Image (cartoon, rainbow, N blue to C red; front, side):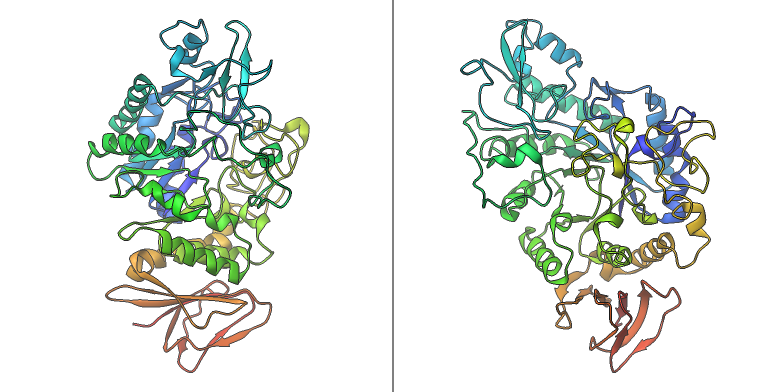
Length: 523
């Protein structure tokens, strides 16, 4: 299981109010020994002006002073490895900061050798070259008055797109990957992995008709178009093949996981490559985009697993730094069902920091907003999902020093939803995750077993069987507010989301309390 660390908000070691790499290192024992995860995904900590909090990189090979130093990065990696934890880091492929030396050179003149390292075009009719819209809304082009051309940016104007059709860019970015692999990382979460290659003709996107299917969340102006031409051009697969080929020179262990926000499943699955020569795993966001109901979840799970190529392996997640907090998306009482679902499906689970505590979305007033996307517009701003990790009760929740001022406000629920308090409560969500992770480690069926939907499933009950050569278990989740009795075969309850002590035999029927999930072992 992977645990996503958003370092700005995980642990502040020096009292400046911003989380940092030494802070992450200081909490590795919590992750490995207390919680029991296997690996970390550490979000960006590279040199950056922080207009998009690290996803606007000005030096790919250095650590921003806000987070520490390269020595701190090496220490984090080494200390994690000593505890048996693998570490992957973000690899931001699509763009850099506008303050990156490459872009500073590129924009200095039309004939600069690095001009073609980014995407520059003449305008059209006094405006941008085409009608493409930034993911953050507004034109995907900004005019540079000095040289009289427009540069493309999929995201903020401070994040100009690299030109991946330039072989020099490809090689320079491959060198970035080599740098971090040689420093000891175990792989990469590839940011915006479907974005780098766009239509070479740069045709206008057609407007979306009123009845056009919308994504799972409101994207503002971005939703006004059908995005045929501004991401996912077939040439992108050659980039991933090249990147994978480079990564594979470091042995069989380094892992590549790509951020693929594509919900057409055959297209999503194409990022594995026809001979598994692209990403080890395209990131699977399907559960986050699915209505929280048994029929919808069952259909999504079966569809994803059907589309994973034979011999491939997928992943699952219910939260990250761009989405509303899990505990604020599911109905009250369903956080426990969500935990069991995430950790019992066939595939590698990714857990976002604080979700093991049930941290909820925090309202961040506009005067304290840090997110360039949406500001205080609740349906766009990501601030509320990035508030500091809640380690203990008290004004600073153990995130920073008593006189430190956190970069984002502490969640109002931190007095009860924190590591210290929940560890002392056997029935807490944190202890549920700990029990689940321990069970998953011990169960070959849950780790690598096959998946088969169970006939006991209904409109309110999600049931499925996981089976390995040596073990069979049935997972049952009751979404109803009434108790249920189901036939799942004989066995023994080895896990319950509501009763840590439950271990009763199952013979004539499995009894479930309202909103209870269980795991039944059959042999």
